[in-house]
Image (cartoon, rainbow, N blue to C red; front, side, top):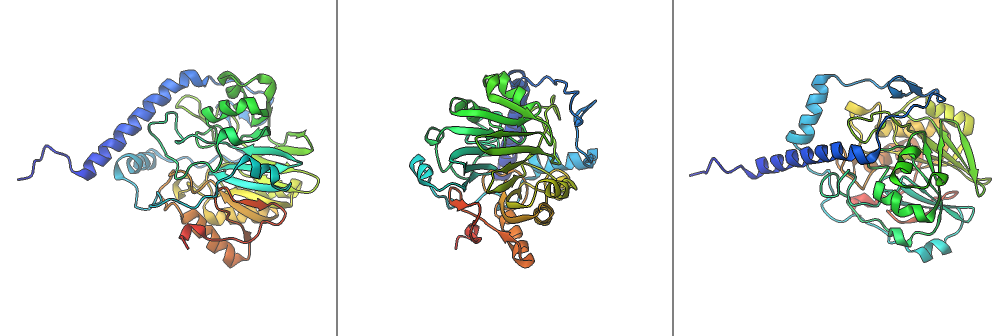
Length: 370
């Protein structure tokens, strides 16, 4: 006889997921106090309005039915098989000595949207997330598929950390504070830098930029460019800080870093004003048709690369965290196939593998396990 009082394994899994989500939500409420999420005003910015920062084109909002269904799918309905790899993914370990010996113009993808660039003999890092989980707590939330290919202590002195926005999978408080001592400057969109200062990063190390603002350090020029996204780390600070993509230029190389974004006309504008680009680092992952206004689908990523006037493309924002309903390797596989059909030069380095920005090489479908 079946004991009806004992939940089935599937039901227990759902209950654990709901409990974990509730705990993370409660932690986010508590985290609001120490995050310093009170909304500041930035009247000097054309992007700042009555409800905080805004996009050039307002994303289509989901209705309450669609929103309710989405939360049901996340918390109760469960995710399909394959959103997390069943075995360790390939990775190339990286040491400080290897970085010192690498030629100028070398790039390393360290996971998700974390990219290390060696330019003008110095080191520059985007959206560093080295914690095990992209979450306000480290006992629940999206967990890494792989360890970082290099430890924080082994990273060299960084000329700049470049941040695109304040979501947990791009702005990791523990990583930022660990890097503060070895980083000369943090480049952020408006408001994100104020958050860093509240966390304890010295104000003199923070530079905040609005869209189209430009700064130069050690022979590398950075321009904060538009993106189509949103911000917030709690229920109380939505769009309190700006989001941005970045153009990173030297006299010899021109790189575009998308951060998070939906597809929008801004890519064409950026390409006209600051392109063409030797390499585009474009998000392709954690997408869904229900939120494509803020996260591109693979075909839109391909079109964005064309709009920008990109020569080669490295897809980012994938292969590290489970943040959507698609298979973990689907973003890479779909974009790889589309690019091959369109004759677009896509490059897919293994995590930690060096590539030359000017001559990045050929794509290799490592996610297939071949």
